[in-house]
Length: 120
Length: 120
DNA sequence: CGGTATCCCTCCCGATACTG
DNA sequence: CAGTATCGGGAGGGATACCG
Image 1 (cartoon, rainbow over the protein chains, first blue to last red):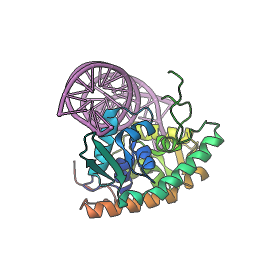
Image 2 (cartoon, helix red, strand yellow):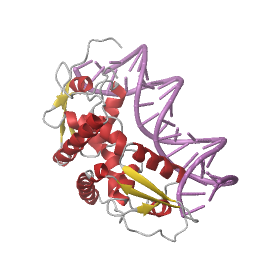
Image 3 (cartoon, rainbow over the protein chains, first blue to last red):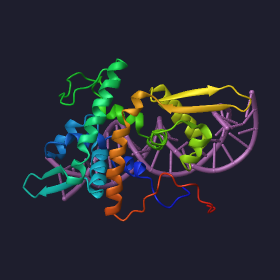
Image 4 (cartoon, helix red, strand yellow):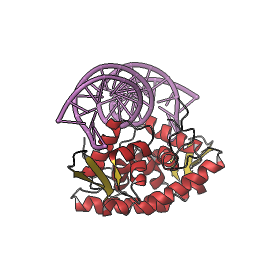
């Protein structure tokens, strides 16, 4: 606020913080995904938030968006090299969190879980 | 939303996300600090937010708070072992951010900068 | 399929004043 | 020194409907 510069820790959290960006990057860590695929993977996200997060990640150079102008439109998202540099760290963070959650008896969700049929 | 469990990546970001927690952990990474010291270090933070962030970090077992009941009250904060495990992560994240900022020509702030005398 | 548009609301955060 | 108390604003997010 007083300074002109920005703290690098802040900068990073502004890029990958927020409610969904972490999970989106995580989802794309080892495969390209389409919009609808991501929407299913990041459960509970609304189209608005997904689009917004993806656009920001794209602007920040972390995600690349490719449109295939076919009759049924297809759009693929993939991580850039810059984003991939973050994977090991998110991995570390994830492991850390798993341990914490175990200690505290918090049920952890498997990332590959399919949508449950249970109505909310 | 549909699931009962929580994703570990989310869990982690809920713990260390937010506007100041990253910088607070960073500040405490290699030294114990008092309340006022932290307030000066994490520039621009209001007492309310600092207290709130510290209390949450304490609840999450990341920060330990020690009160020394002297005539002039003294309260010290330090990272727990669990929080220290996160330091390498934040360190690497910080380096990553520095690189990104250089690429984009964003002026980065040195962490040890003293308050500038420039009035806002 | 891959999104926009719109409305609404909550929670995070800021500023300021005050207290043990 | 180390915080509370109070009020208020604004960004981020949620639900739903609609569009090319």
